[in-house]
Image (tube, rainbow, N blue to C red; front, side):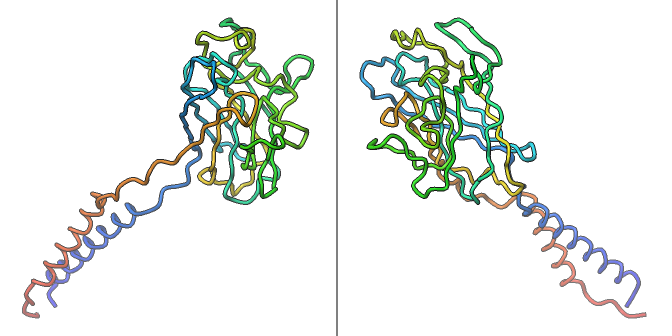
Amino acid sequence: MSQLYSKKIVGYAACCISALTVLTVSQMPKADAASMTFSATGTNPISGGTSTALAAKALFDDSIAGKLTLTLTNTGPGASDPTDVLTGIFWDYAGSALTNLTLSSAKAPTVITNNLTTGSNVDLTNVGLGKVEWGFAKTTASSGLGGTSGVANPVTQHYGLGTAGFGISPGFGLSGGQQFNYGIITGYDSPNLAVSLGTFVKNSATFVFSGLPSGFDATKIQNVRFQYGTGLDEPSTYYIAPPPPPKKVPDPSATVALSLFAVGALRVAKKKPLVLA
């Protein structure tokens, strides 16, 4: 076979291999996300409250080895009634039970009372005389954390944070605090006396957990419930996953790669044999 023909065959093969390489790289799965955000909205049906909209967001982040950071934010309008105050969050994890998970830090950038800032960078696990205002509970019971006996809306989730106790064991509650005080609000909206005299975290608080296993996958967090008020029979909202996106058209790089492969193969097939030397 002539040297010229051999070079052309090698060229076509290299072209096809390059095309397949592009195709393979474009189809590689993305690495697991280090953080997941869950948002929920709803309404407050409790009579007497003028602020009926509820909205909250939770950001879970496991970018620090062995630690899970949760930033809990109230994104709704100002509070007018205690049932507008975000006081807890519950969730499930679809992987192996997080038996060693422990709350190691709970901080509020800003604490307010009657629209006045009364504290900054407040430790919510030690607020004055060692009071624990936000606590963590977990369970391996199939029924979940439960709650006050006889309540129609018990906590079926297995992990939870709260400033109100909700009758959840162990310890007869998530916290040793003052119920809705140190709950999270964005501000005030014609507050009643209980709210105007209360002390609250403004906008968001950040919680850090230790004891996270190396195989933790944030995408397995699910069944997220945001709780308001001081009882499980008061408003709560759930994160609802969005519908799956429509099927994607072929990746442009994959299309180009296949086209190059086809062109190269076609040219080889159509090439007429040359006279051998």
